[in-house]
Image 1 (cartoon, rainbow, N blue to C red):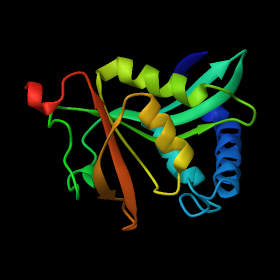
Image 2 (image 1 turned 90 degrees about the horizontal axis):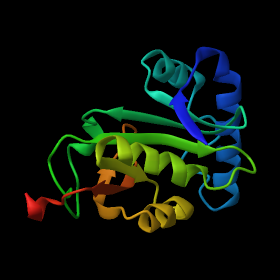
Image 3 (image 1 turned 90 degrees about the vertical axis):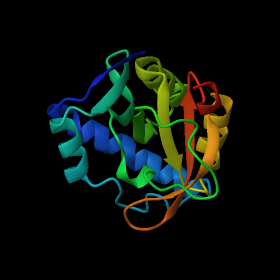
Length: 167
């Protein structure tokens, strides 16, 4: 598997991966996180244009998709019922999804992103149990609750090389 930036001509394949992810989430008790239309194509087009959208490719086929950027995320500026592990610059992962039948893709993508920065923040819906289990397995710490743009809550996770208490 390899990770690279998404290309505009791959938009149809990328949106197909997201359609599969919405179906998977609905079938596994998490129909509310992305509903039937998230992420919208216009958002993914913007992510690609800004070179913040990535694909995981295996045997010339897109097996995973995600947003990745080293940036301060406004939705992470307020955290309830906990605290971030540190206040150092971090990268975020959003809108991660695997293609139908793909195995180990989310793990590969998240590990790749962590290798780029050593300090990752990510969030997920309380009903997204598969993602919560994966993040725990990969060594992420549940840090508290944040709220996304529409006001709905998410469980916030972070993984870093040196937690705050070592600063």
